[in-house]
Image (cartoon, rainbow, N blue to C red; front, side, top):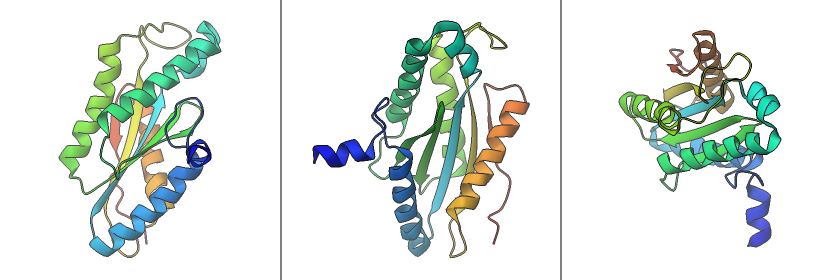
Length: 178
């Protein structure tokens, strides 16, 4: 049991690692294809993290990454919710059976967690506090739904959020590609 948990979690954040996220997302997508429920994919990236890490050091950088993981697990609590470290300072969240309004509320809540935390930044190009950018893709799952495309659409939305000044979220308007 201990070895299984260790193999499924990211050692720094103690949330799912990328391998576990991939497996759980595949299972959830298969289930949702049968039930035709929605899936929302969120990609969350800490803004100007390299500047923070370089300016304050890796120990403080690790604390910021841990705080993001903790904040996400406070919001996404359902057993089926998947919260994982995607890589570096990027996180991925997969939730099912949600509406567009729910997804917008979740994205806003993630942004607000950092606004309320007021963790000082001010290094490099960053503003005064640590912030994050979010891209998300909501899809009514069908037989042709594909997890790679869903993540790609969330990623495109994340890059738009970064282009629009960061500390915001963008919803992908792309309909599932066949």
